[in-house]
Image 1: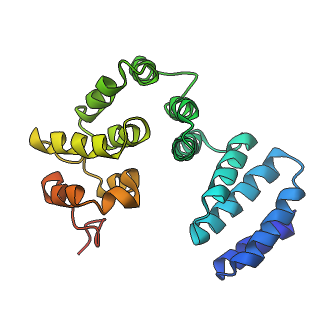
Image 2 (image 1 turned 60 degrees about the vertical axis):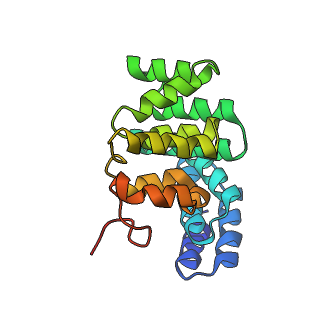
Length: 208
């Protein structure tokens, strides 16, 4: 298993994706314990970074979570990624459950419990997302607005953020990732960029 995983990583680093996938599948078939699952998941993620295969991304996130060997912080990030995958598959209950776990479930703080409860209830969902947007960092609100309310509502939310005199929360990279390529290219978002305090998308990190 370890040799196949190493060969998969080596091929991915060299840009040989077909060979990387062949060795990845060989390693996956030879897994016998949770350490193997985590190792294969990490190698699969490195391949995903090269080929951007959403099905592979979903698989490796599930593998790393199932291993139980990711750190607490890494688990939160993985659950958040799992939520994004579930959203893309229109599995909104799973997306919300993944968000709940990304907030530290089962040891949720009072604020997280309230947010999750309101997001699960269609009658309070919009109000919960708007409250998240007013909290100072609109990125989480953007993610849930995309998941649960749609693209137009998400752009409207950002327009309200700008109209209230607030910015995008300080991290243009996080905002770009939250929006996804379609909304990043939307003229309504492009018009908001300078008022959100963000650099152009050609320089998302704001580097000279």
